Amino acid sequence: MPNFWTSLPKPFLALAPMEGITDFVFREIIAEIAKPDVFFTEFTNTDGLFSTGRDLVIQNLSFTEKQRSIVAQIWGANPKSFFKAAQLISELKFDGIDLNMGCPDKSIVNKKAGAALIKNPNLTQELIKATREGAGNLAVSVKTRIGFDKNIMQEWITFLLEQNLDALTIHGRTGKMRFKGQASWEDIGNAVLIRNEVSPKTIIIGNGDIKSYKEALEKHKNCQVDGVMIGRGILANPWIFNKTTEPVTHTKKEHLEILLRHMKKHRDKWGTTRNFAPIKKFIKMYVNNFPGAPDLRNKLMQCREHTQAERLVTQALSSTLEHS
Ligand SMILES: Cc1cc2nc3c(=O)[nH]c(=O)nc-3n(C[C@H](O)[C@H](O)[C@H](O)COP(=O)(O)O)c2cc1C
Image 1 (cartoon, protein in one colour):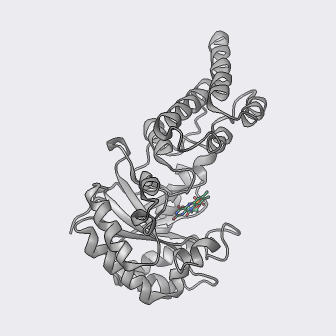
Image 2 (cartoon, helix red, strand yellow):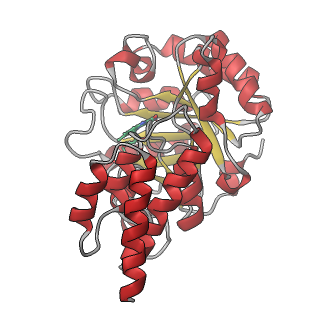
Image 3 (tube, rainbow, N blue to C red):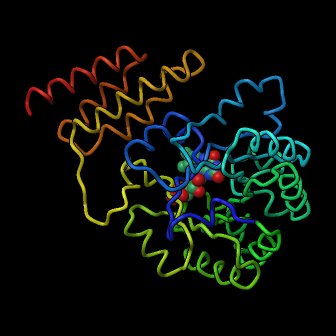
């Protein structure tokens, strides 16, 4: 069955799902300034979607047309919830649904979910089957690591590829490594060779430590992955998805305009349900790489609410305009 993954350019670039970062507002901003080929939502708990807290959880699944292609990522360990979540995600008209089998956080692993699934092929199989049944024609993918506490890439990736997935993202670390050491692109390259044998139609996305488009192109060439996923690289460069290998610098004005736009969209979108605190991650990201950034960043990090921060950024912007 053709699906959106097969119509993407090679190599395509995806923004990694990052809880607390790649929310609706951040995706909207990134879609405007330098858009990846694929967005993922933050991971969403399948049981939460059908609990009394549903109204809050379902906010993770809002998106605009500007954010396509967009994949909803889910986590959990209950096949019935995966079935219902897949039905819902299909009704919401996402382009795909992705199963998290890589998160090593204790709170997730203790629930037999995330990276714990690497140790539980039977449950993995049930979750994929239930998702497929609920998803209808929607593309089904998995995002995983190369092992739980030791590298079992060969066995685990072969097993996943036997599940007839539309796409598979491999972060080249074990769960135990969390973010330590280096991602093994050698393992990712070997996973592509397994794919060629076991499931030639499955799209493979490599992930881990990529900091530029140039590096993404190298990994595509050397490891033959179809796509490259970038996570933390965007924290240092919000324009990372501009497909250029030339070094590009962005002005103070550009950085500050984005921050202001982000803060306003955050306020409009989340109202009173999310306070100012989550904005601090984005202040660290945008207030960088221009003269005077550290001083302004320090002042903004001390703000406690939107109005105060927006005033400071507006002042800094108007002084930029006066000097230009
Ligand atoms: C703050 C943060 C939140 C993350 N949240 C998720 C998540 O919700 N789902 C997921 O599959 N991976 C999550 N990840 C892992 C990333 O998607 C990615 O696999 C990892 O950061 C390695 O890629 P990178 O080296 O390009 O950052 C998260 C990573 C970070 C740093």
